[in-house]
Structure formats: structure tokens, C-alpha cells
Image: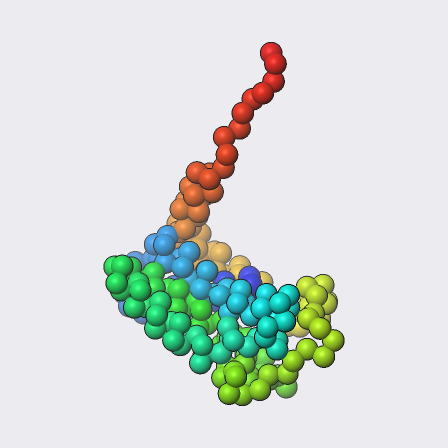
Length: 188
């Protein structure tokens, strides 16, 4: 699954969890946390594998529950300590949804799920080096699962819009606050 699909699924899961707990629509901080959490496995594995050669594949350490569960416990404990339990919950939900969605294709095609317990279970290392984004995209274009990601993203965006676009103002405010002031050095 691509980053957009992971973000969409994480947001949908978080929204369902809020409904299941009879809570209001999501607030800004948990939405940002669930979106960041949904990318953590790839943010760890892809650079460490593709660019640094420290991991056998782009789905190993960061996709392994042997690593993610202790990380999740630590995140929840930290969130509780700083009084942000919901933010911690959202982050962990996003993070744990990622490897689950990456193994869904194993239901209909031969795909390794060894990453879930790496390094106890084996993962196939790259034979010819890391794939390029172009190669991955070309291999995904005809895949119905890839196309489903756009449907999920559309549903998540409609829902997010209906929730009042939580997180957008917080991100926009931080981005604008960090912009350097424009100076007009023209000689009038």
C-alpha cells in the first residue's frame, strides 16, 4: 500500500474508533498523530533498506510487531505521562494499521507475511538492489488493490471534510509561522 492509502485507512480506522467510543469527531492533534503514525513503518524501513542497506527489505523492522508493539507501548506511556492519551492512541492506531494493510494482498496472491515477526521469520532480501519509485508505481498501476487506495482516500477526505478538516489549521499555522519574512529590497 502506498502512503496515501495508509493515511486514508488510518484516518478511517480512527474515525470508526471515535464512533465506537461515542466520542465527537476527531480533534486536530489526534488527526495529525494518526496520519504521522500511519507512515512510521515506511519512514523507518525504506531509508534504512533502500539507501543505507542496513535492513534486508523495505518491509522488515518497522513492519514487525516485535518492534512495533514495544514502540506502541512506549508511545502510549509517554502520551499518558504528558496528558495526551488520545494523541497517543491515534498515533499507535495509525502505526499498527500500516503492516496489517500491507499484508492484505496475501489473501488473494502469494505474498510473504514474514515481515510481521521479523527477524524471527525471514523476509526475502532484494536480489538486484532497492526498487525505484517508478518501478513500484509501474508495477502497481494495474493492481485493483492500488486503485482501491484512491477510493479509500476519497472516502476519508469526504469524512475529514465533514468533520471540519481537523488538523489543517494547526498545520497551516505552523507552516506560516516558520516562513521567513519577505523583504522588499527594491529601490523605489
